Amino acid sequence: MGRREPRPTGVTLIALYEFATAAVCLLATCVVLVFLTPAMLFTASRPSEAVGGLFFVLLLFGFFLAFAIGSALVGWGLLLQERWSRIGAMVLAIPALLGFPVWTVAAIAVLVYLASGEGRAAFEQVPAPEERAPVTSLAPPAPPPPPPGVGRSGSRAGDEHGGADSPAEETREVQPADRERPASGPPDD
Image 1: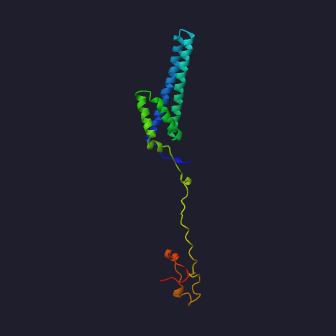
Image 2: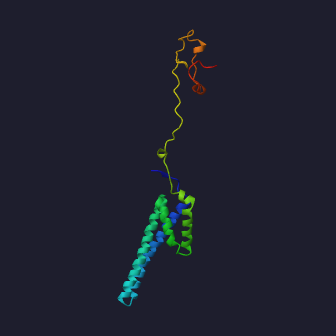
Image 3: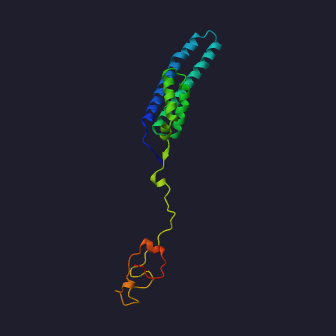
């Protein structure tokens, strides 16, 4: 698994925004449950009004609860820099646009930042060093150097013209330019 770059400050701020949104939605859920439900039940003059009111209260309760859970999960995912959390934060910012003026401004900032290059880059994986493909050279490998004591023509030093001290059969290190010349004769000095 790859690693991610250090979390930018913008992602941390958006995660805090998501946690704050979750807290506000959870508070709204409690308000709906504690205050709105009894108000709907006791102010209804007919049973059909009470059923309609309860349906509305349950719908509102479900919306706020789902939004609170979603915001908390997305905030946690943003802190961990999970790819899905970027998309989740953008999706949750869309209904927040209706909360004029505070939530609208915050939602626009979230959408702009997460759609920017810096916002996208924060959630991209960087391959770990062991996951990177090895770099291979297209050039053929260099031929191995001749064993010590063997000249370019393949004869051992001292076999032919006068012994080991003969200048014609002196062994020397093979240079890259020598590899290009044919090995049929003695080197040109």
